[in-house]
Image 1 (tube, rainbow, N blue to C red):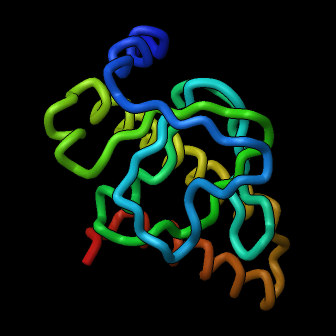
Image 2 (tube, rainbow, N blue to C red):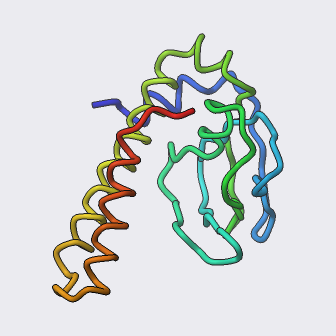
Length: 151
């Protein structure tokens, strides 16, 4: 398991950005090429104005999908309280900084495990009616898509 404190210490040479509550550091659809690693503070992740998650744990990573896939962010990230972030630019950082690449991989793996658990919970709660069988088929399709290579 990666020691988050040691990981954060290894980032000490990176630029640090400070942001105030209410600032949006990543905007859905607007590529920045930046990877934000929370040093201290709290943020929320919004999609269409709806909160889909929040984070206040040092080492939380934002913008990684955009950096890895050369795509703009899929959600907004808004600061909830005064926060500081280590900021890295592009894939080169992940190629050079192996601890950061491993950390990002672990974050993504935890998210994938959580999605699978959520999908299993939806399947378990769905009653056996024609409408809910359609829901179960949709959940199965989403679950299968998580195993498909990206195009």
